[in-house]
Length: 150
Image (cartoon, rainbow, N blue to C red):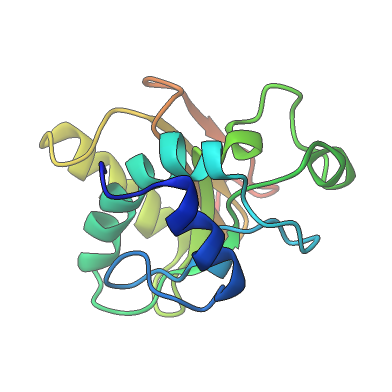
């Protein structure tokens, strides 16, 4: 995005509720501890991830609820994130949908990957949400407590 400069970012920081894509606002990327996503992370990673999240969201035509996107080092440690977490660069997003199980969303994302509609990134299944990133090529994990529940 050539139009996206440091000056534009500084204006956006003042208006966190501005849309940066058809369905995502800037504040959704920010760390849950209140820290804004740094300019470098937003430009290099988050803006690369957004089109793929839009593709996932389009499957259901309902809001995607973001649990966690960018994380500061401190917040990542607080929530038990791994040291190499892509959340620290805003290259990963944990999310869920009100009317769809995390298992359903996980399987639908696998279909999108297999159809070549989104990159073969990291994909994790958790109780109540899904993790997707564009950096962990092909990694899959299931961290649900009860893996027998679909």
